Image (cartoon, rainbow, N blue to C red; front, top):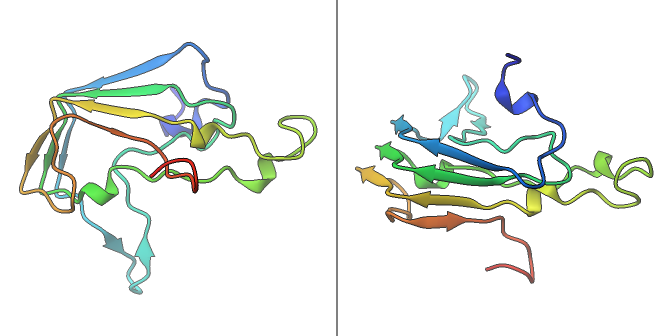
Length: 131
């Protein structure tokens, strides 16, 4: 298997769904480098090579113990380099903006941040489209 898994797929499956069950995260907090520079720290990473589509992501029976809910994931804007005539035309493909993370039966112990719901959905924020 090629690792990390996030480097494995370049194009998503249009009819696919991903299911993750019984995952546990412990003591996940913001991090800094040895020089004090903030680091990107996320529990669940989007596939950085899925320009067209990221399959629906289902998470069931997740456990977050002493975790910052702001670090569950980071939705990103499509990179400008995805805008090429051979692939998506003159604008970047919109895969990262078409992402849905669905969580059910979530358990929080000592939650940090504003999210501590049992069932919730995460989508990217797109100005004038989502709140």
